[in-house]
Length: 454
Image (cartoon, rainbow, N blue to C red; front, side, top):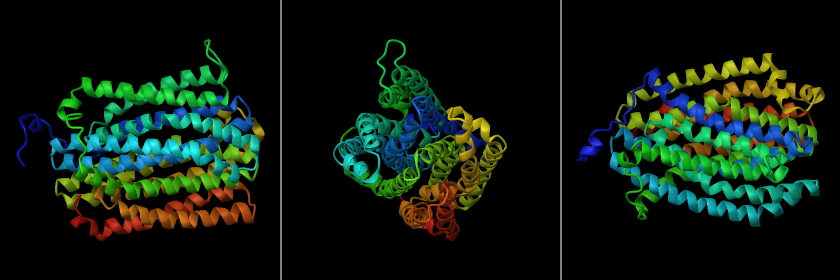
């Protein structure tokens, strides 16, 4: 393929060295940690409104996460495609893929808003026992969902920067988002700095403002650093049916996979709600553990996706398994450090929510289960995302369906029928991640991916 002079100056192909792995993974880690800090910040401020607010933050947070991971699935599919074109050094194809991805993301965001406004209230009224909680959740979500278009386009930006090995720029946008979120959380939840006292709803408005701010800043950064010109972004916004179909074909199994996964988590939280406010509040802090301390794991997972796809684009199939094992070792190493820290200093983490000693003692057994599950997750997500990098996202969907089936059956029996303590319910994470790992590991080792083209 004949490339323009501008394209010849850029080489986006990666090596499989540890230095290359860390140069991609560490900026992604920083970028992922910041939104999780936002989640924790929301919960800390909402915890100041009482245990009920902290508990409801778990339900509304997981609901929004269902739509967030739809964008994440689209992000992963687009990222694999951009990484493959980068490995093939087809720079001219990247800009068009990005513009079609943004178009798809906006359509999905509008669908998410419609579902939240017209369908979610019925589902929440059916599933939650407390009518006051239902009304609070519905009002919050009707506001919060308006941030979805900003979030989705933000995630497309992630796919672009990670897929073209420029993950260092992720930090700027997410840092802007974090600072904005902390300021407006405090101001709008408690009515500080002359702003209205919006209580629980203040967290929704704060999140929307911060998502918009992060998105605006990162597009300025992309333009100022010449990435817009180099990758032909915004050069051709015309509808491209072939690339749209390619993105959707690559992404829809991942979208379904992530959406099914989080919907099962919402099911889990609804079962926890039946156990009472304290157990729900404890479980919400466990979600923060997965979100914040799992950032290293998900960063290495994203690295596996982009690097595997890039290496295959270079026709270096023989290096793929070596690369995956190398990334996995880094992922497990960080997860073990986190596990040790949480088990040695459980009070240090749990005390930040300000819920008292009885809350902490209830949460510690659950924290021990969750922290060890993080180690298993650190292995599973790397292999799962390596499968995404090969282009066979349908394999991920099949693994997810099997894992969720076992997961939902287990939590329903343990929490609803046997009414066991919630630590037993959280042990479902072991079942889930083991079921994800086995088929992903088998598929990579089988070599069936070597003949696949995307």
